[in-house]
Structure formats: structure tokens, C-alpha cells
Length: 585
Image (tube, rainbow, N blue to C red):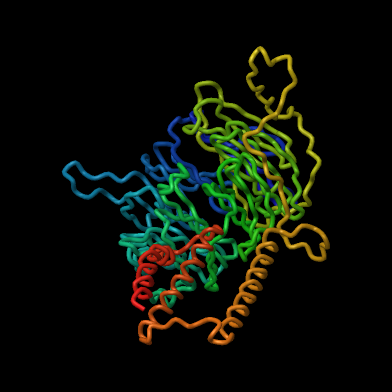
């Protein structure tokens, strides 16, 4: 039976495929045949598809109706007359289907009809309609148990309880809430909200526990920053911390075309930190390990670095540099894929996370899409329109590097979307990591390396290799206990330097106190005779010393806050003031 997951037998692993050939289903590994249970919808106008979170329901819009089928038997459950729907999403427990279509106003300028509908899946009744003008963040957000649902309305977050959309149960009102994200998992639900800065005030992200929204004091945590035109907020699976990627549209230093990004860590216990990334350049991707205690960042000018950090924001493992701009943890968190898609050549590095060993290095050229199969063993890569309109198709891989299946659409046809059927956690148990490539009937998909052009005069001479960049090798950053003469990790070196700096400062302090305790004739004290002036001179010197320390921190690569930068800017004025006071002595 189609897409059936039965106890005691491994569930099949189907994919939905949407494109100019219509909408159809393909059985995943090991058969890779088109499903005969799901009747292909051959229309060329399929705008949207959605699986429910547990994979038991499937919905699609074909330009005439929105249909919902039961995945286990392909029976049609519901059909709605919504020819213009372009977005669909199920609530986590499958009680509600949300649909969205473009908002339009009447010709005379009067307000248009509500374009966001929420339907009861069991009865087919429309529970509520809203006006939702923007496509961005169109869908309301539910807690995993559906006890809470929230949406952003005119810079407020409105909360509904138990899918009763006629009553607003709570409101979170801050000045111009731009975005919010609900925490995953069990109650109590937490909310991360982002408020952009204005008129010199910083942007900030705050964490709240629903429904405690009584001002800044009720917040679980708060982090403010200046360099942010937009942010991306990422909860870990256990809902204990949020990673915030803060981005500016323009890099004022002119160093990057991508603008400027910083990465911040905020925990629900109130702790926060700026994640120090050792290489300058864009942040391409940041992902949490499903275990919630580590995250991986891909960053820096090409060739990019990739580093795994722990919850103290200390580096755990550095993958060195390479042609990559994305990271993907397997559903069980035991395997990590680093990849270079888009304008890169599609090289993938598959790593065993526990032992930090490289498993395979397959190449999926021209890929625009990547997704792990819920079984944690298989991967799909695809080339889809409109990103690329030629050579559209998909490939299914085993993580050991074997290409198991490849399909390319006929010429003049396009593929728009590929989706695995989801399964709930626990359906597929984690398996031991393999290093030996699994058998495959298909040949290796590794493309032949392109030969560099060589002028005729050099063609008979030996090739000399020249690289623009020397790739950095991977290195374990964990402190090595009892390592003897082993080289220290970067964190250990940093701590050692701190310790040495403290020691040096202590010695300097001892020397200065010794000089102060020396006979007065040795170091004559210069005073103005006016205690007030002496006090001012002392304070100015104290401020200038603090500025010197800030400048040293900035030179060491530390990102300073706005008020600290303003202090540095006052240095010239303070020096002038000190000079004037001392000249008056």
C-alpha cells in the first residue's frame, strides 16, 4: 500500500515531485518506481504541496481546488474551491490546514477580501479568515501541541489558544515587533521576538515564556546589537537556546558584497554571547545539531571555514577551509554534510560527528536543493526551476557516497519541487555509521576535473601546481587532557595568553606600587595645589587608560559595543583637556 509505515517493517520512503509534468509520487529506496496508488495530477498548474508533520496527510493545489488525501490509502478526505491558493501548511497535530493567496484590493481602492484561511481538516469548515498582505511569514505559528497559535499583526504578536481564532487570548506588544519564533517541543512555550533598532537605539532579541509578557523584567533573556537590518532566529530542539544571525544589507567597510553578519547566542537562563568566528567574511549557514548541545557555522571569505561550537560558544572541531556554503545535520545528529551549492560546484563532505572522521566526498553538480531522508541514511539533491531551468531532475544518494538513483526530466520540461514524506521522531532508529560505500548499480557520479588551459609552449613541460588559496586542514579544538607535548588548542592558547597577560599586569602593578612607595625625593609628585584640578587630571588619565584597553581589545579582533566605540572617539578631546589642565599647573 502507498506510503504505508507498518510496525515491525521498515516504512517506505516516498517523495512528492512537482513540475511541468504534473504532481506525482515516487517510491524511495530501494525501488525508485512511480507510486501506482497516488493518481498523478497531470495539470501544469500545481502551485503548492504540503505534507503534515507526521506524514499522514498530503495536500496540494492544482489551480482549481485544494485537495487533502490520507497518505495510508490515498483516499480523498477534503476538497476546497481555492483556485488561487499558492501556499499550504498543516498545523502540527493535523487539525488545521492554513492556505494563502495573493492579497488584492478592489478597483475602486476599497479593502480586499481576507486571503488567509484556516480550515478544520476533520469537518472542512473555515474556522477563520484573516487579511495577510505579505507572503513573508504568512503562516500562523503553532506550539507543537497546538495549545497556542500566534501571528504578527501590526507590530504585535497575537496569541490564540486551542485553535479558537475568534478570541485573542494574549498580546505581546513591543515597539515594532518585526519577527517572532515559537520554541519547539513540550510546554511551556517560549517566544523569541526581534525588534529592529531606530533613532540610534540598538536592535534587540528577547526571550519570553508564554504568557509572561509584563515588560523587560519578565523576559527570560535579552540581547541587543547595533549591526542588524534583519535577523534569523534559530531555536535548538530542546528549546534551551536561540542562535541569532544579525545581518546588515551593506558592509560599510566595503569588505563584502553580502553586507555584514554577526552570530549571537542567547540562552533561556539569561546567558548571552557573541560567537567569535576566527575568519572574516559572510556567515553562509548556521545549524543546530538535533542533540541541542552543539551547532555548526559555515563562514568566511572563500574558501569558507566550518566550525562546530558547544553551548559555551567554544570551538569543538574546525573542519578547515573548503568550497562550501551550507551545512546539514542528519535527523539523528550523527552525520554532518558540508556542501557548496548555488554558485559552487556541488562538492559535499560527509562527516561522522562522533569521531569527526570524513566518510565520503560525493559531488552533486548544479544542485539547488538538498534534504536528508527521515531514515538518516539517504539524501536527495535536486536541480529545480526557476533557479536553474536546464538539466532539471533529482538524485538519491546513500551518505557513504553511492549514487543510488538519478532522474532527469525530458528537455523543455521543468521540475519545481522535491519533498520527502516526513515521519515522526523515533520511527527510524539511529544506526551505526558506515564508512564502506554501499553497493549501487549506477556508476560513480564524480565529474572529471576540468583541465586548465595551457598555452602551446608549455604543453610538453611538467605541470606545476599553483593555488590561489592553501586550504586549512581540519583540527580537533577540544582540550586534550594529559596530552603532554601535544600542541594546545586555540581555546587553550587563548586562556594561556589571558593568564600570561594577568601575570604581566600583576607584575606591572607591583612595580608601580614599589615606585609609589619609594622616597618622595625620588619621584616628586606634581600637584596643582587645587584638589579639584588634581581630581580632574586623575579621572582623565583613568578614562584614557580605559580607552587604551578598548583599542587593544579591538586590535585583537573583539567586536565592541556602540558605547565603547563612542568612548574611543572621545580620546582626542580628553587628551586636549588633560593637556590644558597640566599646562595650567
